[in-house]
Amino acid sequence: MTHSDPNCIFCKIVEGEIPADIVYRDEHVLAFRDINPVAPEHFLIIPLRHIASLNELDSSDTVVAGRILQAAPVVARKAGISGSGYRLVFNTGPDSLQSVFHIHGHLTGGERMGWPPFPGKAVGHG
Ligand code: 5GP
Ligand code: ZN
Image 1 (cartoon, rainbow, N blue to C red):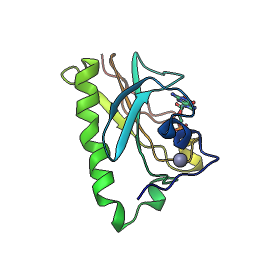
Image 2: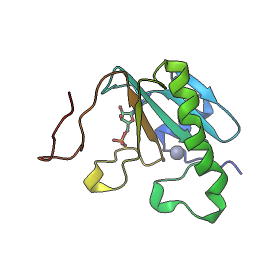
Image 3: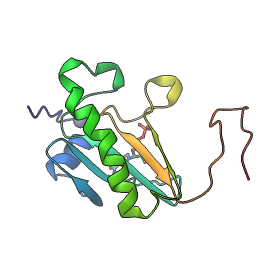
């Protein structure tokens, strides 16, 4: 089941070759703090198995895709932000500025966010 890409930085974190501040792990997913946080709380939730982006998800990934979602509230609760709120964002492809090609959900929170999060469209909410 485990498919790893030797050139992938997140596969190296899964394998323990690169250290990370891991907050959650099960048989399908891993969650750790983003090295360059953009919010007071910023975690990445990734499948253990190398899948480059949401574009590469297929019908054999149903369980892992569900587990990524299910890990989000677990991580949020540990960070103390499940009540105050959080976002789960999956950058996919060039327009999104995806930079690491191993699926990762950015779980961010710990402060009031604006909506919508798109250039030139920000309205913000007090
Ligand atoms: P993307 O731009 O692909 O949506 O997000 C990639 C994220 O991975 C960025 O927020 C970046 O800070 C984070 N990141 C990149 N390399 C590392 C690393 O080695 N360790 C950790 N913890 N985060 C990383
Ligand atoms: Zn990978």
